[in-house]
Amino acid sequence: MGKVYVVTSGKGGVGKTTTTANLGVGLAKNGYSVVLMDADIGLRNLDVILGLENRIVYNSMDVMEGTCRLKQALIKDKRYDKLFLLPASQTNDKMDVSEDMMKKLVAELKEKFDYVLIDCPAGIEQGFKNAIAGADEALIITTPEISSIRDADRVIGLLSANEMGDIKLIINRVKMKLVNEGNMLHMDDIVDILGLDVIGIVPDDEEIVISTNKGEPVTIKALTQSGKAYMNIVGRIIGKDIPFLNIDEKRSFASKFKNFFSR
Image (cartoon, rainbow, N blue to C red; front, top):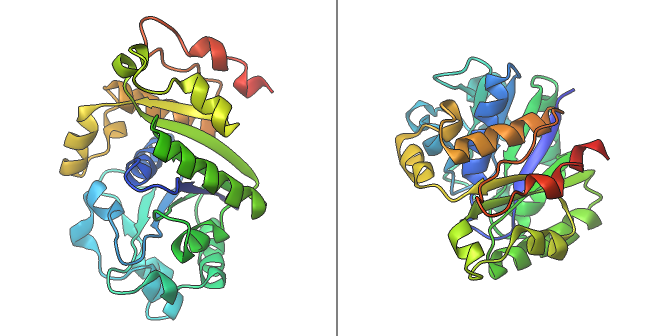
């Protein structure tokens, strides 16, 4: 049985879909079979970031309604044989899906793949409830902004109330110049506020925008700081002891988190 992660945040625009795509590519590069499930019914974007938007025939709603078989809806990535996408419907509403329907679909995916990554929609309404329904673990994405952190804190409470097995934090779009100037929250402060173990810190990188527009996640080449950061997160997910990138010349975060995976 595979592991199921839901990638969530509460707030929109913090990088959930980008993170899902990059982690999926990274896991596939490590030889694991991976399916990326877009749970944003009505507003799918994961297909665009992967460059697979022109290959969609069926979607997850078709599978849940019995219009097609799961195999027909899965889209194999153009670059990695073990990476697949299960796109969301653009013509349905989040209310058309129930938590039981999602659990059944995810259970079927777990039997076929090593990793199932669910790209959760923004908000905490029905779409969020559906996305977390079949997940074993959660990756919370936040940025060093007060509004993002507050929403993440709310989501953490909801996940805990739903007895989510394990919850880890990814701090995205870190701008060290602003942090050092005192104009952006430091990672230590975010950890203290949210009380979660950090599994990754991703620096702000314009290459993310460029790669997204090309439909090529940065982990394909992993030459930039953000690409390396995502690949390091992948390594930690599969159980490797990998130090944190030093994205700050003035201070290394590795010292703060070096014992994280030895607990």
